[in-house]
Image 1 (cartoon, one colour):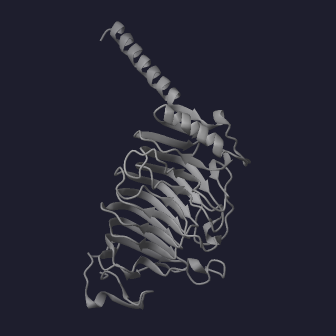
Image 2: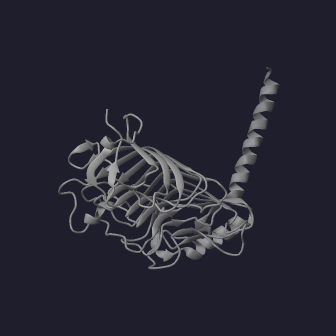
Image 3: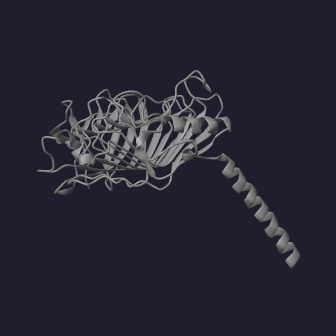
Length: 365
């Protein structure tokens, strides 16, 4: 190849790169250009809405939120268009969670914080007459590099995308502005994350997501695919709602939840590795005794159809072979590395679960 052809190819590549860069520049919307201030004082709801309105009018794009603590709500408007709306912070948040001790919360990164006692979640896909179909807006919501905060025993949710068609969450930490071990029992029935509801646009992806301190960590609807998920110090860690299509999780960490998994609707799902730790002797007090495990799986109406591989640790002891189900007759659970689940009289544990039924486990080999 002669030098003239090489120069021609390089010029074409440069022109293509400039065109792509120009397109990215057009579709990037910096929230600060619309008045957003990350001073932990200013209510940025109006600024975020102005930015999102222009983004949607442009046919979709990315709202960028630089480092700072931004008070207010992000309310993604409903639309009849099927478009992508990204909300992206500057850096990946530090996911603070644990099983013992006391840890101060970070103040760095892109933090979206709302301390209202009622109303919509901190981030929500709005439910208005502008619909793509049924009850769903046309938005495919992408949330990345965000720390979403409420307050101890929150009266509002963290992220509510039930009316979005699709979503992808990556590097998202939803919390109550308190280290989970010190969280008070949630009494308002709120959820850290609600995924798009049943009959949506068939795409929900969760990657590197941590939720702490809510009544329900994540409400799981159909077509959900999750990996590197942590739910800690919630009443219900993952709650599986009614779904036509099955959901899949790879690695899930469940720590100090009252019920690690709850099933409230008919739902098929699999969890390839469920790593759990429950507090050991002396690791709870009067303020956080509610975080003592009642059941690993709470499915009293036997609505779940599932396969779960688990690994259980008790604080101060280490790995143990115990797994408690309340109901869940169609949920097959086995310890990592054990033989496939076989229902035999010997597999009935002597310990009774909260529903008065014997918990089940695989035979250990």
